[in-house]
Figure 1 (cartoon, rainbow, N blue to C red):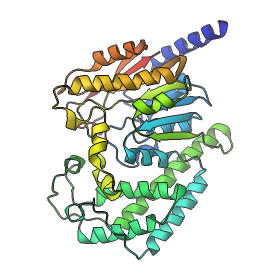
Figure 2 (cartoon, rainbow, N blue to C red):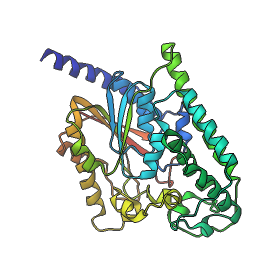
Figure 3 (cartoon, one colour):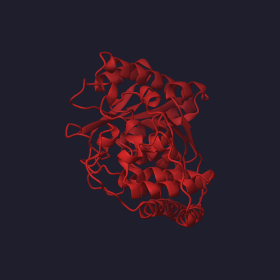
Length: 383
């Protein structure tokens, strides 16, 4: 009993310290270099999980994110010496998250990237374009030729090199395509207006270089903290529906949950990765239907109720996986153009057995907003 009381008192003290944090991070420019790697809509700033994980866990403990997205929570957990388990239905986001959290030294990553660069530049054969790629619509003739040559080489890779190379390939598809207005036009499958093109290999190499820089920054952080190289904690990313995967996870196996559920009716995370899904031969429609809160579902009569019900199923699973007397931190956002969800979300969390301990609004930076109406989200801490 005494040990349980000490843990509760310790958690209470740590929660009090969180109340001193400026969650807007107005004066902070400390975003992780991983944050700028492959595009993903509505990605929250790396400072949020970094502060929360540092405050509410100890080194060696495990963090769970059932909506891992492109891996921001996992990157910060790994950097801070915590293991992480993430779940994501979007296969492109899963690929990106895995590429950011390889448990290898910066030198190992640099050697992988050098090998990929050399092979890509020497490649002469061209891959067959998957039938799912709308080649003439999205790319100029020159661009598609270069993409085919690059794709042929990447298909010969395996293991960690393939993960990084495929992620870099995914990252360049939007910058080199004909659409220059906004990623939302690609999301909605709208015809591009111009004939824009960009050097594929140069863009690919620049993206690979960003991975080397990000892993070097992670290594430098560890060495500055400990004075010696550190083996990266393990990160496990599950691809699939969190409602199902959580049921198979061991009870009380997570020391902290940090996550940001999809904004209701604001973004189509799967459709935003249309270009990559086309090249990888993935059918968008089944994935879109699995996506919780997707913008494409917003006109359904039951859309709001469905969103809350689906969120509840996820957090019921989270309650099962989270250790007793530990915290669940949720970054919850909503649009002023949609039905208000904040208070209803808190209610479903209470129905799952959670109690709200702390709530703070935080401003969304202009660079993250999908529309001008998206200005505030809430940091909610439950136990």
